[in-house]
Structures are given as C-alpha cells and as structure tokens.
Image (cartoon, rainbow, N blue to C red; front, side, top):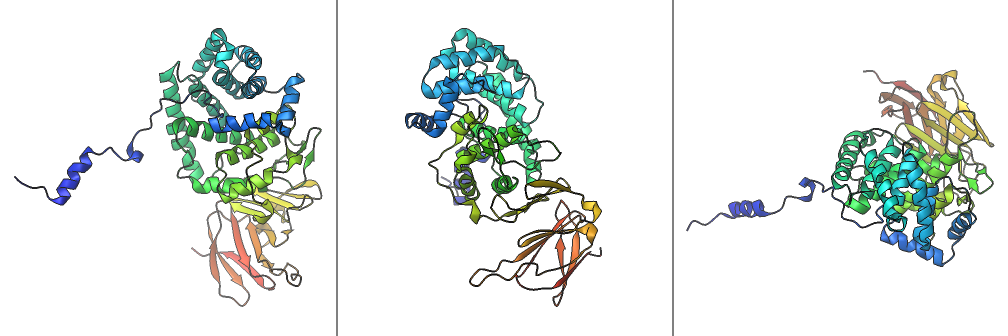
Length: 459
C-alpha cells in the first residue's frame, strides 16, 4: 500500500478541518435572550445593586420618576426604571407611550425598540404586537445618519424572534455595508463622521449591542481611531464649566454665537460613560474614567440622569487625567490647553477653522488675517499667513528642581500632506511633512533660543 508523504498527509487532514474563523460568514441569527439592548446580565446586576445600595444616581433617578417629572424620553426612562425596580406598572406606561409614538424620529424609534425588548411581558400581548409591527416596518429604510442606523439596528435585535429574516437582513446591512464598507474606510483614513455627539453616542450603543448579541467587536482593525477617541473627547471641551440648575456641564467646542447646547453636552458625557463601560482596560479609557468621576458633573436632570444611571460605574478605578498630555494632534486637528485648571487657556483647530478660549470667552480666529501666535505653556501655535519664521525659547527657565519640558510648535495653514524644509540656527536643515489638515508639528529642546525658518520643499 502506498504511503502518503508527510506533506500530502497534512493537506488531506487540512481538507477535513473547518475553515478559519476569519473566513467564516457571520451568522446574523440572534440567539440571545431579552433584554438584548444595553442591559447585559453584568450591567443589570450592577444597576440592581445600585438600587439596593441607594446610590446617589439611583436616588436622583428614583426621585424624578416617583415625583412624576416630565421626562424627555418617557419610554426609555420608564422601561429602565421598571426593569431595575421590578415594578411592572412602569413598563406598562412605557408601552402605552410607545404604541402612540411616531417612529420617524430616531430617538423615538430607539425608545420603542428598548421598551419592546425590556417590557414585552409586562406590556401584554396586544401592546407588544403593536410595537413589533412598528419596529418591523422601520427595517425597510436603509438611509440616515448613525443615530438612525442605531435605532433600526435596535429594532432588528428586538424583533429577531418574531421577524427573523427581516432582522437578519438589516443586521447584515448595518454591519457589512454601512459599517465595514462605508464607515470603517473613513475611520482608517483618519476622518471623523461622528462630529454630532448624538451620532457619537449612537456609535457606542451600536458597539455594545453588536458585541452583546453577535459576539463581534466592530473596533477590529480600527485600533488607532478608537485609541484617539478618549483624548479627543477630553480635550474637545472648553476648560470653564457651564453652571446649570441641575449640575455643571463640560461644554464641547462649537461654532456660532448662541449659548451652548446642553443636550449635546449631556450626550457627550453619556458617550464617554458608555465607552468606558465597553472597555475600561486601555490607558486612554482609564484617563477618561478619571475624568468622569467628578461628582459635580454628574447629570441630575430629567434627560441626563437615565444615561448617568445606566452607564456610570463608580467602582471602576480610573487614572488622574492630569497625567495625560494636554495636547491632541491627529486627524488634521489640534486641541490643546495650557493646564488642567478651569481657568486654563484653550485652543482648537478642526475642519479648517481655529478658535481660542481665554478668561471665559470663546474667540474665533480668522487664519487669513495674519493673527499672532497663540501660546499655551510649552505649546505655541503659529499661522502660516503671518510668515514662516519664528524663534524658540518662549518658555521661561524651569524652577530649581523642576523638570524642563520641550517646546512644541504647530504651524497652521500649510499645504496638506506636503514636504517642508526646516532650518534651525546652528543645525542641519531637515524635512518635515504637514498632515491632512495642513498642520506641521515641530519639537524643540527646552531652554534654547534659536531662529526657525520653514519653506516648502522643492519638488
């Protein structure tokens, strides 16, 4: 009998092995039990413990619901209250709201999906069937911003038992077409499609729902973008908080002369809480947890309290954000502050526009009007329209025993992705490339005064 050679034997055995996991198609059949949306068993146990311990978040949430406060999202808040407190009457109220609510608004569709998923049994068969029909009808739409896709993905997961094929079709579209083909390439290119805090929060909810029910981590292959998300969030806020009746808010940078949108501020904090709940292991997220643990920013109002209660984990240790760099430069953007104090100076450059915040005032900077440099401690921002010559050594000498910090110069207004010749006194000329936003970052040793000249390299 002819014996197989070792190589041939290996190939024969390989033919009978299952294909590697990466080559297998994702099964979009949903096998998990309700609740499927946001309340996995670990989180549900934590919330019930918070109720038993009478935590300050639970006390505030309970006080608003017991006091019949007019909630912005009645379906979501009543359903959450019912699941945690084991009071079916609140679920019934949520279901009665859900069957009357139009689902053309992504926020309302999200709430109906949550109510159906969390409250189906207490609601009763008649109300559950009405909600299920609404959710099924929404899955025909393939358009919309991230918040709309999130809400329909929630609808698909909620009705996966009663309308399996429609649910699988939408889940496949959301993950393979919307996420992998449309969004992921943009993230790999350094773009940020989630400039709205509502859309950013929707993205984090999508990450949770997909991992909890399909065992997929949508961050795969996008590590850099998600690693940058936490420092981007922290440094995108103006240093001075905004005092409101219910709590203080950190205000994300925005344009225009109007007062800040506190709903955006609340959703921004909700996104950060949900991001830490998704993965608290990476160092940037530990800094973010340290940023979130200050009680004066705990959301106590009728909109924010449900998100605060749902996502916050005060028992999760964090790192002090004061140890993280106070400058962010990536994706063609700069965000920097002079210190971590509330009275710090702040500078931001994004989408081709520049803005400063000093002494409690926001100031738009017209980059074409030859503005002077903006100084933020060891960081200094120069504008190309004012010339490409400057001098290092703007930092005063450090106090005795203090560590000297290198100086960082940002040149704004250059040609994106282009090479520039950099000449520093008494040093050899070198080349540096501007980023996609036309920003050139240069670093210099502390304590040395020298002239610097920058010009575009010859092709």
